[in-house]
Length: 323
Ligand code: CP3
Image (cartoon, rainbow, N blue to C red; front, side):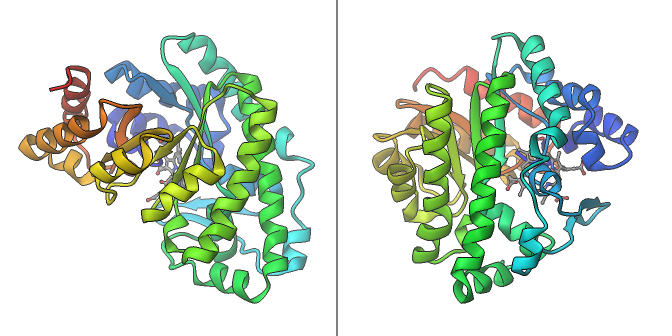
């Protein structure tokens, strides 16, 4: 998940060589290297492409930059005029370096681990595009969606097209699984969740599946609560990533019968390490490892995480024998 590399000294060394974060994402030599770093250390079964969800707004023509210590900053999209200046035409050309990264990774990994591609879901991308930065309550995006649903739908439709095209192109270049990150899904009330999270994701999954049959799709509507179940049933995702607030017993009963569950160690337990880490890991594995399951964190790894705690976690998961 995002920020993944920052806890590793070898990531920070490569990061220093890049002018800025987006340039880093568009430099295959560097992106291949940092994608492989955690795999070399820990030998996970899945390797996630190093890139960012915000390369899509960038490729659509919105000004995006990552300010040091501040996270992403975007020139906000707040009117129909702003939407009309975005264009799908240069999407794949602009993202060509990402596809080059994927081709090289697929050669390097060659079947020894699953290469995971990803994109942001339309709602989460729209939040960044409209708000102009993260860390908000998404008030502007939500208000726009209430006051002018047809205008807002125009932005979402553009993002459905962009995301679908982008994911299909990633598969053509070698990714074997895709994940759709809807990090801001949890701020929405029920009807807005259905309209802006479930509906666009259903459209993406349907079109993706038609183009790439057999390629698994994992959805991550972070904070969806009890709506995780409707999300899975209606979007048709093959797997769902659950955040750390989801009770594992509930995930087992409500979700594991209909899809693969991924999750959901509290990233702070990984920072803490020791008995807390051992106990939480065993609790999750004890409940979920008997069904279709991908062990993961409930959200991105924190930069202050000691690398040796990750090594311990990998050992615990790999050594798990269904106790
Ligand atoms: O884990 C990985 O390294 C895989 C690649 C990846 C990144 N971002 C790299 C990254 C993935 C899958 C993402 C997804 C992403 N990006 C999401 C969805 C998942 C989530 O975390 O909710 C979101 C919302 C973003 C947008 C984004 N990118 C933010 C808000 C930030 C700033 C984070 C902060 O706290 O400063 C980023 C930067 C980013 N993306 C980093 C990395 C490795 C850190 C960049 C650095 O400083 O080196």
